[in-house]
Every structure is written in C-alpha cells, then in structure tokens.
Amino acid sequence: MASESGGPLDACVGNADGSVLMLRHTFVAAQGAMGEGSALRIGLLTAGGGALYQRTALGRIAQPWRAGAFNVVLPDCPGEFRSPALALLGLAIDARHLQGHDVRLEQLHRAASALHGDPVIASVMGALWHCAEAHAGSAAFFEHGVDLVLKRLAGLPVASPPTRRALSPAHVKRVQELIDAHLGDDLGVVRMAQEVGQEASGFSRGFRLATGMTPYAYLTWRRMEAAKPRLLAGHSVTEVALAMGYANPGKFAAAFRRVTGQAPSRWAGNARGELAARV
Image (cartoon, rainbow, N blue to C red):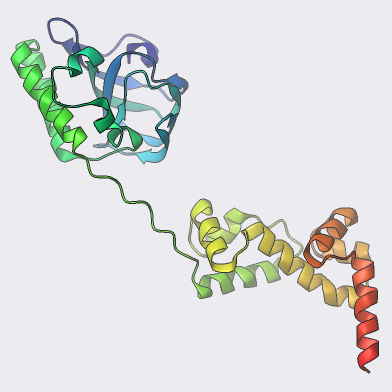
C-alpha cells in the first residue's frame, strides 16, 4: 500500500512482527499496475470515491466506490487499476500470517471479485483501528480482529448476476421515432439511451435483446429503409446519402449494400422494374 500511496502514509500501526498492518491514508487519483506483494489487502473507503476500474486474473471490477464499501486485493494477484481520489482505512495481512487462520485464499476469491458493503467488516475494521492506536496493536487483539474479518470475507455471498432485460416495446418505439426524426444527424448511442432514461451500456444490451440488432445496426437499417422511397423517386445517390447523414456517398452505398445486398442504383432499377411489371 505504501508503494502505491505516492508518499508517506498519514498513519500506520501494526502488530509486533509487522505481519498485520493498519493504515489511514488519502490517495490521489491514480492508475497503473497493482497486486504485487505478499499481503492480503482490504481497503475501506472513508471519504471521496467514484468510479473504480480494476482488472486481475480474477476478473474485472468496474463499479462506483462509495463510502462504507471495501475492496479486497489478494496476495500475488497482479493486474491494473484506475482509481479516483479517496481516503482509506486499510488492513494488510501477510500471506504467511493467514496460515494460522482457518481460511484459504481460494475462499476469498469472491471477496476480491467485486466491491462490497458489509457493516460488520466495516465496524470490526474501525474497532481494530481505534483499539490498535490505544493499545499499540496487541497481538491478542489483532489476532481476534483479523480472524473475524477473514471469516466474514470467506462467507460473503455469491453476487447474483445482473438480470438482462430487453428494452420494452414502448422504449423501442421511442428510439425508432427519435431515429426517424434525425435521419441526417450524427445520432449516437448515448443520445438514444438518454431518450429512454438509461445509461449507454445497459441500453445497448437491452436494445439488442429486444430487436436482435445493436443500436448502430438498427440506426443504419432505418436509414436504408428511409432511403428506398427517395431512390425510387429518382433522387441521386449523392442526394440520398446526404439526406441520410452520409457525407461520403461511397460509404452510404456500402452501407446500403450490406443491408439490402444490392448497390443503391441497382436496387432502384430492380424495384422500378418490379413495380412496372405489376401494372
């Protein structure tokens, strides 16, 4: 922890042999490598916070870190991180010290795979800090506190995977109306998501579940559908491309071919022939 703090720690106490340490420190926003070292580290956020990104062999964490929640980093589990400015109450336990407790590192994988908010662990860490300051980190007290924290970490429930829900028909209709009203504009996923009050990543998943297409693919399809009657009416490919938001007619033609299987001019000629044959 000290190596990642960017300077001396605000306060640090530990047991006699240094195998258990506690600290208080304010960290600046930072990013880089993480997870080197032989200590299990638990960081309880006491102030500040924001979006935390962390990637290790255990997976990826991309969550808002709020006061009262804690992060667990296992020994010798390297990766990368991006963290906001924050103040932490930290507990570091040397891996060799873990051998005296009935907890295996594998039992802590769940704890290290996400941010958690557990009032018991937060209370125990607060008590450990205050008593360690008062009693200079007596071995008996540290052992008891560490045991409580480890047992609680090992018993954290498995987080339920987020439920994936399709966008409702009403929301799909609103997005379709937005697209149709802005066919020639630079319309992105963020703007579509805002139309139905969602954030972009969740909106994209829900939209694909509802329509079978990504938002961008759906936008392209709606543009090509709107282009067809214009082509049939005799407008040039360049005119139709500009009306559909394409500054480059070649890119419009390529998109039209992907959607319909034919170049715009060929499609228009074939469509006119089919209409004439019906008359």
